[in-house]
Amino acid sequence: MLRFKIFRQVIFIFAVLLSLNGCSHVHYPGLVNTNGKYPEPSLAQNTHKNRVESLRHELAALHDDIDDHEARQLAEAAIGFSMALANRYHLTRPPILHNILVNLRLKDRGLCIHWAEDLLIHLRSLELKNFHLYWGVAHPKNPFRLEHSSVVVTAKGQPFEEGLVLDGWRHSGELYWVSVKKDTYDWKKSE
Image (spheres, helix red, strand yellow):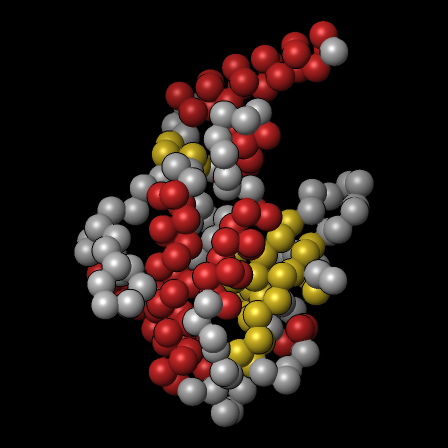
C-alpha cells in the first residue's frame, strides 16, 4: 500500500512538472449551439470549414450511394462535438498527460474510452441512414501495447475494415480521421 502511495505521488509530481514545462490546457473558444446545428467555432472558421469539407468528402467516398447532406451533417457533428468534449473534459495536452491526470483522479474524464463512448452516443443520436457506427478497439488485452478505443464509421452494409476511424483523443479534441486500413493502430470491432 505504501509503495502505491509513493508511486502515485511521484506520478503526480511528474504530471505537474510536465504541465509547467510547455503542456497546456485545451480550450476551443466560440462554440455556440444554434437551431440544432452543431457548434461551429467563431474563430478560424475557414480552417474549420475546410476540415468539415475534407471529412465530408472522405465520408461520401465510402460508397457511391452516400447522401451528401448526411455526410456533411456527420462531419460537422464529429468535428464540432470533439472540440466540445475537449472543453467539457477540461483537457490537458498532450493526451497521455491527461490520461495520467484521469488515472490519478485529478480529472474526471478524457481517456480514449470516454471519447469513444461520448462521441458514439452523440453521433448515434443523428439517426444516420447512410452510415453505420462502431466502437473500434486497437490492441485489446495486449500486455505490450496500450489498448485504444475510437469510433469507426462505415457506409451501411460495408465491412468494418472499409471504415474511417474518428478519433478525438489523439489530437486533444481536434478530430483525427483515417482509413481503418491505413492507421498505425490495428483496429477490431468491439463485441
